[in-house]
Length: 454
Image 1 (spheres, rainbow, N blue to C red):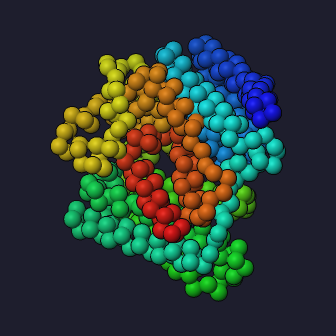
Image 2 (cartoon, rainbow, N blue to C red):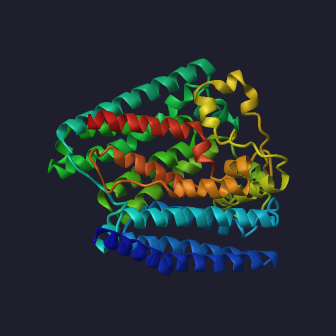
Image 3 (cartoon, rainbow, N blue to C red):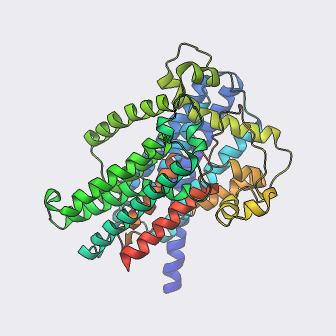
């Protein structure tokens, strides 16, 4: 009887997967082929719109099934496939028609990510609608005043260490990027190996603050009457000041985005009013930091080489930071002489252990990009660099295997989910998991989790 029940369950899983899962991927395949044909015929705008529509459709399907605004697969499909669609517009002279292998590689990465995620979700999370709606909107159990106190301690320690590391770098290097006028690359030069990891760890503080605030509200305590709340506010101000002083637009966006995702992870929703306020605050901050980095409109337009020279900079800059990354991937596909067989993707190991200083050959790999100043790449750049199309398949499947428990015994776990969600959102931007800073954040978050849960 047990074997019959197990066999029946497996058959049901297979039937549901074949019926719904394969159907979704079949539609994506059709859209992808249409986009490819349109691009080959130089109907670039239509080619991009088809892929953007497919990306929106895949995200909406995951959202409708789970009710989770930050469903990992949904976010990945929306931003990685959507980013590819934006790149298909070919609005810059730097962009060229992609090689057939580029199209194949990007397609396989998405398909294997989606498929592995789907299989594991259906195998381990059951089929009831109630279960499916709560698969990724997990809620913490066992929240306690002691955990809240330990969250405040963790925030205080991280902020203090980050501030001390920043002051040390400023003293040792002799400048603060915000006050270094006329130096376009001040932020990239504001870096002491090993120390800068601690400087930028401040991006975790706003997320921890959100966890603390939601926990306090759940216990029925007024936030304004909680002294810990005001301490958290002070720590947030200090933590967000460091990216501003470093003129790091990315760190500021990462800190804000992770805080929002942490809130959504804990509550399952996010007010459109709050989203609007956040955007209103971030846009001027982003523009101010661009000015402080001495990136004038003329300087940026000279780099971006837009076909329409009159296009406003607030459109061209985000466009290039999304679109050109896929063209950099195409450069890799067309120009790569030989694969690195895992050495490129293991850069965090060489960096965090210091082996890169002992054996420089471990990290000396040329970067294939459209232009020297535009070095951002997609999430899968190193995967192809290591093993070609097989690397795309393996890494896509590996990312698809990332899963989270429905409930966590410690509320600090929400910041780990928020980090992964942000990496899915910014999958068009860089090789997150080949970046030692990513692993430093994850290790630090894990230590906070263990401390708060102890």
